[in-house]
Length: 229
Image 1: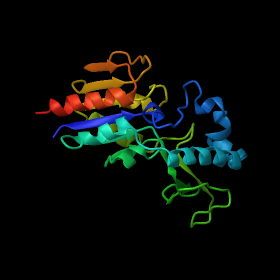
Image 2: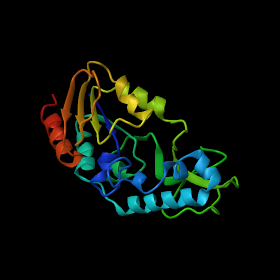
Image 3: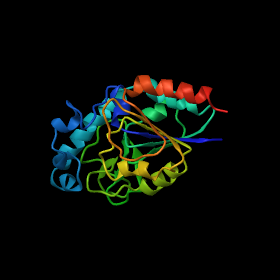
């Protein structure tokens, strides 16, 4: 069975109403990333950091998967599908995807400050008084700027295994995650879907579709399903 790897970014969830970081009107126009999304920010003002992620969590809880998320699920009928996502929402899972790797963590989880392996489900706001069972404060289970990406090597291995790589809704500007796509096999088929013009250099067997995920991805999925032999 052929393996399809979907590498998704913020544009994938934008059509579900979740703000992206870098577009006009995005989250970073309202916040200084150094004040809400770095280890130093957590040390200086954890209340502000928690407030930022509490707002994001509330947005995620109110959002629903869009046509692009559902299209990916349909691929599981005929392909071995793995989603490697930069997104911290749970929309891929809500749509029904069964194998999702979150490079940058998950907003609906928190973890112990002392032990990153101690994870807790969170469906509401976090406060500075919330504690893990080891007594340490709980922080959002997300990768902040300046932190290592623990799932990077796994993501790299998965992308290297792809027969077909679908890159969707990402500017390919957030590193190190963006560099993962460069590890795809030269002979693998690659489809890049994004409404913006994205430069990816010399990338063999690449088809670019400059369109939103909600319309372009279902069409691409239908083509893959009808042409799968």
